[in-house]
Each structure stands twice: as structure tokens, then as C-alpha cells.
Length: 161
Image 1 (cartoon, rainbow, N blue to C red):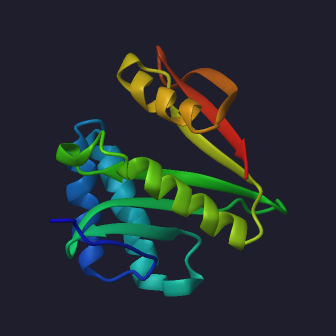
Image 2 (image 1 turned 30 degrees about the vertical axis):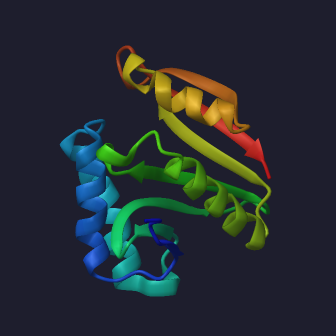
């Protein structure tokens, strides 16, 4: 039986726990990073449309299984940050991240954005993440060595949409 897939940009207080559960499930993020993800969704819940953070959720058969977070970069005309992309660990590798990314890029384009920036770690653990973005049309714009910690640089990727 085919699963019902729904994308939504509406945000509810329940999404705070959805985001926490999704990010924790990946096993990629430390507690501080999990707290940051929760802080962004909490900002959106508290401020509504006045928040600088926009979200797209992916629900399968009524269960939230992935999300993205993005926002306009203040002081620019057409540049957006793609802050977060995460899918429940047990559903990774099934094309859901690709679907969420495409939907996020469509939303950015609809909002007048044309340049999308993603920042990620240079650690070995993030090789699959960087390869994913490269496969879907992003390119490495810059690497800032030792940004997050010694031996952990920031990789900035960009895509024109």
C-alpha cells in the first residue's frame, strides 16, 4: 500500500518535539546542536510569521518524519540560508531528503531567492552529507578551517536556483 506524503509549512507546538526527535534520531548532532534546532522551531512557534525561520515538514501517513529550516539572509536581495535538513534515521536513504530539499528550494524561489547557502562540518562523519548536496547541484564555495573546533572546519556550499 502506498504511503500518503504531505508537505506542510504550517507549524504547530507539537513540531517542537518532532524536530527534537528527528534531529536526535540521526545520531549526527551533539546536545548543543540539538538545542539549536529546537531553539529555531520554538522561535517560529512563538513568533509565527514574524520569525526569520521558515520550515517545511514532511509527513508520511500522518507522522512527521523529516523537516527543513531556511530563511532569507538579512542584508541580501536574493540569498537564503538552508539551516537544517533532517529525516528520521530509519527512513534515510529513501529519497526523502531529496524531496524535502526540492520543496525547500521551490519555497525559496517563490520567496524571491536565487542563491541558497548550506553550511556543514568538514568532519569525516559528514562526508555522506556533503556528497548528498554535491549530487543535487550544490558546489563548495568555501572551507573555513578549524571553524567549529580544531580539525572541524565549516564547509559552505551554494546553489543557484
